[in-house]
Image 1 (cartoon, rainbow, N blue to C red):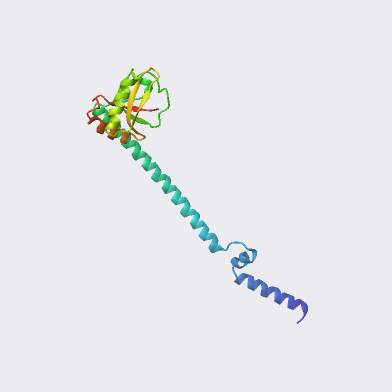
Image 2: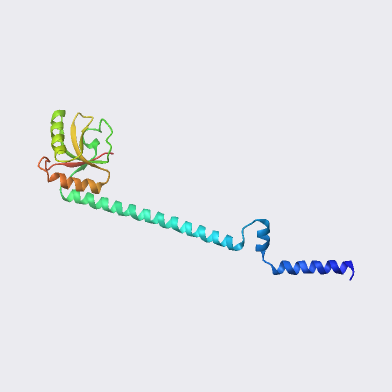
Length: 175
């Protein structure tokens, strides 16, 4: 066999070997991921995207339910003759920032001592509360601070059953 035929035979053998082996062999040699590793990564990315999408949908459903609950609570407050007001409606905003979104207002006084007396009665009955000073000079006694309207409505119903609470108690929305 001459050298030319030998080279042709070796080249043919190499080409045959290359066609019989997969690209994965070359990927492994080059330190690159194989087709099965690429497919596994693709499936993982799809699963992660689906999980993130489902989490967003779940979050939206919870927000929609909270909104529907809030509307239902506001309707209940209206039907029961209750009131919910913003500080700007009653003579201006609060002179100091209040920590919660909702307070049950059980009284408002121009004399701070009267507000203190009512607050002491509420605290003696086990209610958390504080005096909220409005820019117009009124001192409102706010009890049962809450951040959710549903909790504020439940607190209003509970507080109205107390002896110290007037029937015209209302919810302050701190905005």
